[in-house]
Length: 247
Image (cartoon, rainbow, N blue to C red):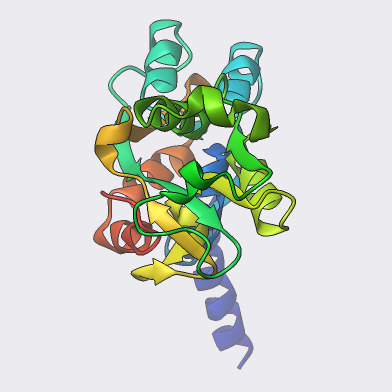
């Protein structure tokens, strides 16, 4: 019995001896999917992803200033490219892990119509968006309003969140009747999880290609490399799609 217990202990140790941790900077729009991906990643590999979510623009500044992140899941493809040029990303490690979609959303049923025409009615006091200077979804929201010829009209009604998570919070609590949010925040398995929304046509703004990258601080961390490989698996892609992203 003692020999069996010892053998079991050795096998358990062998299975976890090479497990590690990886520090991950994740765009706010991807926080929900990443929570589930991190759990699956730990189950399947033994490695643990330590996740911080926030605005891509702020992560850019933090990484340049020496933040200990080892992997970045950006809300765009431009930021990782700039970081690579500046020597903060391992050359050739970047790839698009998801393409996001912008949604005009209300926490209440029947408020947002299929064409987003509610924006023209004026029957709302506040419209939340993410900071367009630091959050790609915020920039996409401004581009959409400009494309519709409504930006100047609705600008006095805009309430700006620091990132897309805060823009969603304003809308979800009713502090803003409408909000431009990430589809992933309000969508699961082919339908809105609550409220009403309009999926903004991709032609209204530049594509929201979201790139992953191995940061220089993670170059020698097997857990960091494993996470990027995990994101390319069919299992991970299926989960990402379930949140409304294109893969």
